Length: 176
Image 1: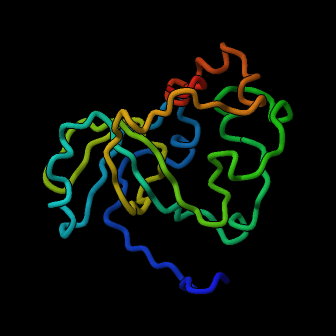
Image 2: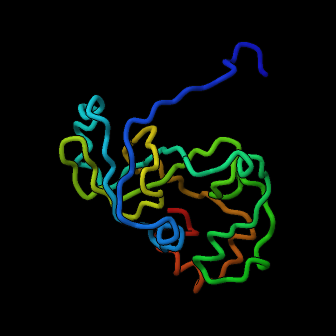
């Protein structure tokens, strides 16, 4: 442990994702699902001014990741292969930090969703890839300065054919 750091980090959910879709439907969705993020009442004042943004960044805790899955450090991008309908063996094995895999030491998700409307302590969103009842840890507005010009990706992603990349409307390979 690094000197001066706490042995434990504690985070408290500010709300939860709510929708009608099964885990399999969310997993297999190309562009995510529609949902409501319901904040706990004590955090509703924090939504003031958010209604003008088209998209939000959601930081969530992947509550269905097991302790065993948290130990996995190398994966094949199964979700990407499934969504593209490509054989898994066409993808390399890479470290979890090079993927959006839920298998990771700290199962934290960062996702961008379209904000449809706000209503009291509820955010109506589209294109979310989180399971029903996923705890939400934080919400941030998506702003143009977050889009990095000239960002690059590794060869294994560049090698996806344009036909395959068009199947991923919210995962543009050209980044921005």
